[in-house]
Image (cartoon, one colour):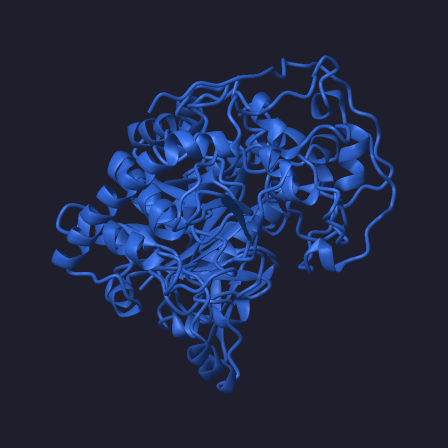
Length: 569
């Protein structure tokens, strides 16, 4: 397609940070900020996170939604038909049908279960503003900034007044497209850092809820190849990840987008909003949904063809769906896409998909409620691996009923870069807090998909890089107790996390809170010998009530980071 575009740039800015009066160090579970009371003070952002002084309002794309539809809708829908013909043929001939039963037939690959640590690269237009109203202990979602900074959004976590102060009322959500260039983005350097920190797979945010894609998509102009960046960031990350031996996945807002233009029978356009509500095309959509190509069928003219084209071009090892709470899994195309991934990979390589397919059918939801089981759509119900977002599905993840699962969380509570973290390191976990968070997840049978929130121009912020390298150093010494391990009761206690080797010949005690007389709660043979991982010397121990008491030397009792004891069975 002939696609040309547009607008200004955000240069590299050197700035100093003002002091923040309220520092916070506790990272306790909390409801989302929209359910909380927040400070009414509107902060002034550092210069690098405010509107550039010389910026003037400019149309994000040279053509309006109506003009784009006139010139490209017919060809795009024809392309979609050809892609769907291929997808349906592959799925009809393949082992996995595009149904719930087809999804359930697929099993999580062992490489994922063994991996334990992945990198979740959260980067998009929202990274330029890098803000969400802050409340101590609450989950923060800067990656929703484009939506929550709109004047019509009035919930408790609204960023509208902040946006007005720091960016101006005439600066609209899609104006960030012109500033998104990735001047400091270096995929090769990033993937080397991820490998050094011990990661085994990487899942970049390649399309968040606004529909802005970080790859060259044939189904939209709203991507980084057709914007001032003029780069295919997905290709750069895919190639760099594989060069470092990392598996590569895609995060995509598969089930829905905030707005999308839908072509009507008379050739006019109406806007489909999050969840399916329709409204007439209004001028504000030119700076909220710019670059999108109107189609008749949101799912089969756009969503499924776009994501399966991505599978054809980049051959991902993993699909990570989101936006699943808005639409039903049987209606949003997720089964078609996943079946295509499975069938295309069958006999060639092992792939996997998470559990965020969409909402369950009403009868299925009702059956779970009768059993007293809380569900968020298909989460913890269907998927090669289940997902947990800072505890939102924790009550359904039970090591005693183990299923592969993954926690998507970070060294702070922010999803997306938040500029305040650069001022106040107490907003992020310490090395010890972070390692303990990670080992507890592993002890309960899960992986950690660690959020890495890139800054406006694509670099890893210093405080995040420091934590990454710290976990890498710890894993270099203690990785035997992490990679490829399996669960063993009692899994995790406040003082110790337990794992066992895949062959069942070793048990590991990851000690978070050491004491001189350390009691191991797991069952061990009577003639057990205990040693520090990496040492050949046994530690003194004795038995009390069928449990082993280990006498720790002072240097371990006073250790600043968790350490690992190993028992060979």
